[in-house]
Amino acid sequence: MRIGLTLAFASALIAAPLAAEPGDMDVATFLAKAEKLEKKGVAAMFSGDFKRLKREVEAAGNAYSARYKADEAAGRTPHSCPPKGKMALSSDQFMSHLRSYPAARRGATTIKTAFADLMKKRYPC
Image (cartoon, rainbow, N blue to C red; front, top):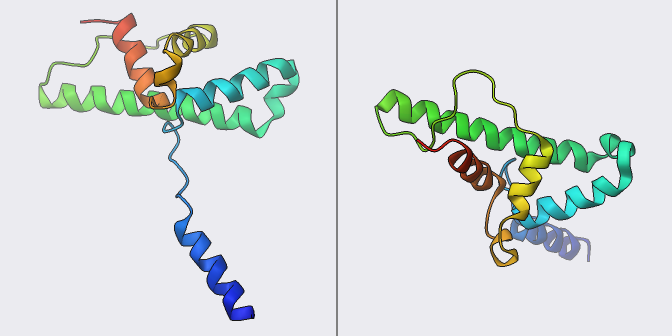
């Protein structure tokens, strides 16, 4: 009996999907979590979901930056042309962009892709 439970547990672990990397969350999930947090007000800052969403956006920004630098180093035409130096992007601007995706595409669009799309829209070459 114990061996059977151990095998069942091991099988479940193997079959379970691996945790997604930060930035791979889809837009639909991100928006659902963000909207729940908005309802909490200031208390949202102490939520684990707040930290997770923050990591998602940071990972998306880092992936964009790495792609931009790789294109630049390789002499390729960049995806977008942001100004040099620090860029400002408010949470309202980012959330508005995420909400602009049709509901049918939100589940298939990652935060990394959405971030890159926003940069291309805001800073075309």
